[in-house]
Length: 329
Ligand SMILES: [Zn+2]
Image (cartoon, rainbow, N blue to C red; front, side, top):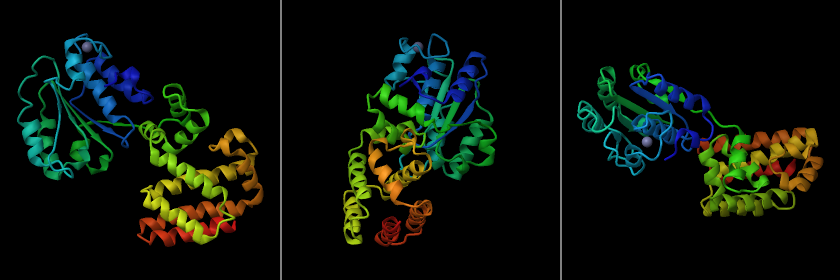
């Protein structure tokens, strides 16, 4: 479990939470919204640990009894809501684990903290049960709802919580973490950062994902030779990627980044602006061989393929239509 200082980015949220602690204005209910991998849990844990820490500073000391208990997952005043049904958090979960226990004073700390992960899974009844608690919480209670989608909450819940939204990190922040802390090479880090769209967890996952490495190799090979391959060969490629369980949407994202690079090079002739800097020679060739509107058509074809997949059009057909545009432009 990290402290605030170990969390990359999210400065505004860290500052908000630390100031709340310093000025003794901790709210009873928070909502942390962000994609999986962005750091909601890290922020919630850092906040909880700081509140429980015996040193009473704006960072957990990691040394005191409370910090050690929290680190080992055994702090009696830090409660993580669990739920039996994977798809939903029901009214009984909220009643048994929050409503019925919150009036019991904290064991060893001033605060008693509840963390509800995947809070978007609360049913309406569960939210109404929670609302009763949030409306009249005991002074020591802090409830943190972590979610990917705060639209799923009742307006009455939203209005009683401090809402904190995690923003995507800049590519440069992610890149420097990958090169600095994980020792990943510059050019690969550039690709992971572009691919992760501001989500550090996703970037770290990609960097260690065998599937992604495989997709990277296969797609680069395919894109380099796309004009020499006939459509049957190309479809065979796609089919094999599907058999290897590669995410077809990720493949589309990858191709989009690739052709954005082709376009970028055509416009700027500047290698430093490319994501696929390692493929500089290919970018040079491809951007010379394609017209502006041809590259635009390819980018549109990739968007269209995504829309077709969303609409449950047969995968091979959607890919074939897109690959034909790629071949011809
Ligand atoms: Zn401590």
